Image 1 (spheres, rainbow, N blue to C red):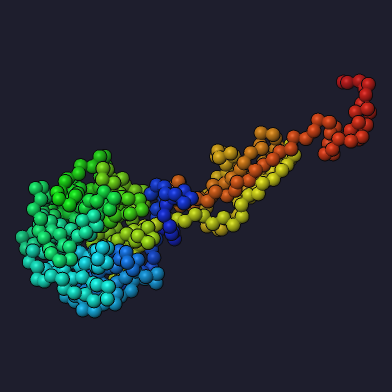
Image 2 (cartoon, helix red, strand yellow):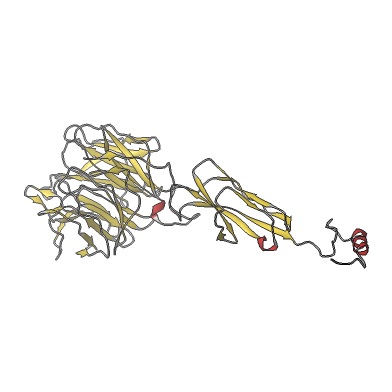
Length: 433
């Protein structure tokens, strides 16, 4: 695995959005969650999300030593308690996914399928299975309640086999059209469109940028509209159930030992590159989507340890004091203030919902107030490091009331009385200049 650590930006949590709603992905940043896992040898890993226990599960394999399973806890990756776990070392990538209907972890590699039941015991569901292959990719098709496996390697090279596993039988299918023999591809299940998505991988003559989708009966190659990610293999492909898109991260640059650090999203019609490079250039990483948090998590190697990052967006800025409504007289000064934490925020004051040019500090001061200044004011507090629209807090609103005064209040003391009459009489019959 080739993985180099880059700068990690921001300590962030939650999903991208304006208030409680969702917005565009430039809000997203990567968070190093500080969950290292010691490794040895050259690792191959895969991950999935256990919807019953609400945590990510990772399997790690190396060219020597036991197969290891971990769950992601708030304190980091923790060894999964296991009985009768598969212990064979292997030098190829395993396939791990979660059967949410049977609430079972399904682990396939080589010629075997293992399952972890609710008692925490692994069972060798089928072995030996000559029809399985190394580096196979598999995902759980919830609409059809079965695992779907495609591609991988056999002794002669990549294969184009499509197989399903329902907990009882492994079935090799014979669709009319299939992708070319492929290994090292990304694979994800789009739950809304009920399709298995395959991208990239090693094919005869090189690597590919093709997108294929499986509808439960046939494969179909989808030609994307517009720009698309470059051809690659060993990439991460996961379904984001919050934004209902397939997310592509990283992969190996063809003909090199280097990896991509880009991020794309697939909606079934077109790719959209997101403006947040991954903090690691990655390939062969373990990744999954944490449904309880709404975040993508990736674990890979840097130096001699696993590093774990989440693709997250900032929560709403923390405002401790909101501007207060006030009443002033014509010609006076009116001021409003926002109290916020010391985080790197930006401020934009608005008048009746319209941005006020140049009013971008926590304090808004209006001098020589006139009738036209009477309005509702608020302030949009946002994260300085993120493009808008992102998670923001609207400080306010605060109403400004402007007293226009009374024409009969000649002396300007706030009331009409004999002093006003005396002032008028004192000027009676005076000549005007």
